[in-house]
Image 1 (cartoon, rainbow, N blue to C red):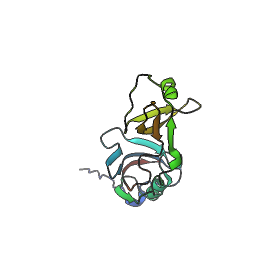
Image 2 (cartoon, rainbow, N blue to C red):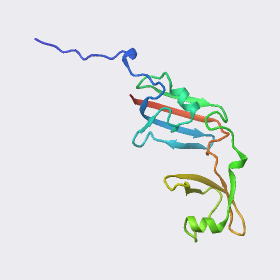
Image 3 (cartoon, helix red, strand yellow):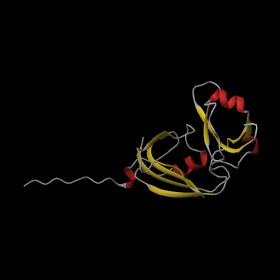
Image 4 (cartoon, rainbow, N blue to C red):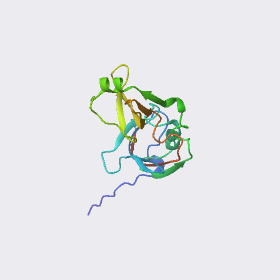
Length: 160
């Protein structure tokens, strides 16, 4: 009679996150108002540590974790995305808004609008803060969690 044993993997044999690691993970970012990003009910994210896809503070929390880890970190206000920068609040003339998008669009506080980068290869978002009578829109281009405490939950699926 033959038997086969299923080998077990010791925690010390699992890959460990280090600078430059390529990760497959689920993660959730939440502030006081709730989730901003949550991939737990979607396809996992893939990213390369050090490529700027996560803030440096969040990347630091991942260093040293082993594949399979599921944990949550609490980051103090401003630690994850810095403090809000008043220079990131910008008025955009209605004329420019019409050129960039639908000239009949009505904007309201809380709306998030995507803008093309100057090179046209990417985009960035701004949140509407206020709309003037002349149609100009005040946007906040800070990260939505800037200056806020952040809950960072992560489940490391794969580490290369």
